[in-house]
Length: 362
Image 1 (cartoon, rainbow, N blue to C red):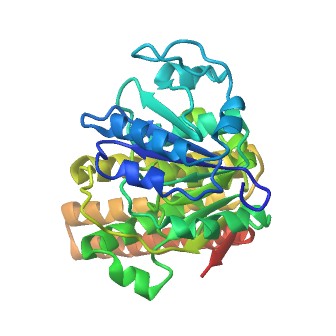
Image 2: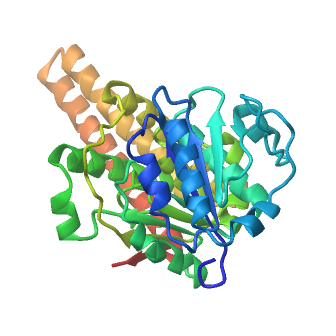
Image 3: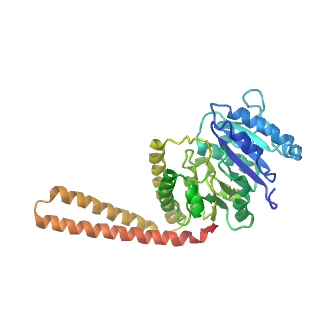
């Protein structure tokens, strides 16, 4: 436990042979559960998880008591070993959960579900186990485990229910980020600010996070996005529930690992998801659960700006006279400026609504 709080770590792994074992072995002693999820890897990731788990258990003096806390097995694990029946049908259907090996709970997906899918599997297991705070750690060794308390402290001290690493808060940390990642991150940061309503939050792609049990139970885990944009999707869901978020300055360690992200499909998928989530947030938070005019400001502003752009296109095509072109041009400017003004007002209202939910930890 960490300062009286039980801690679980969700560690998704896909083809992380050579990395995942070291991450398990280096996990801090105060971590009570390690949910190691093999997302149907094609290399030796699964065997490495099991080997590292046995090594970790052999040096863990409390492994016997931790194992006694586990729930009974239902016998569904491939290869003859039992599967823990955690009472979560979604978890049982999507993954085989092996008997715990000390504090490590090895989980293997029945099919590849993606990074978000692996995170969701771990979250489901942590909720069922009643873990107080759940940390997400990548299996590639990019995250400094000694800094985990910086993520846990805001939750333990009651300042936030979700804390995430931020590589953009510090100039030193920004300088360590490869240029192409920085540019892509900056674009996604802006889009996620609009979609989520957390206007002070940056580096939304950072997978080093901690979340309280209350926050996990407040959101719809079943519908958590299962592609790489799960972290952006989670922020939107948290904002609708008025969950407090802490942005924690955190460096990244770049090594020999290779990213499995295919940007040709990643960009359109995540952009579409963010647009859908933005509209869902406006409807749910400001029209269904409560009412705030900022939703109307957004819609009217987008409509006017779009009409302005459309009018500009028509003016270019149908300008039959200088007078007609002038009138259409004036209409275009008025519509576009009015639309932008409405959008800016909506953003200001949105920032004010979420300001109380955000904090930054340098």
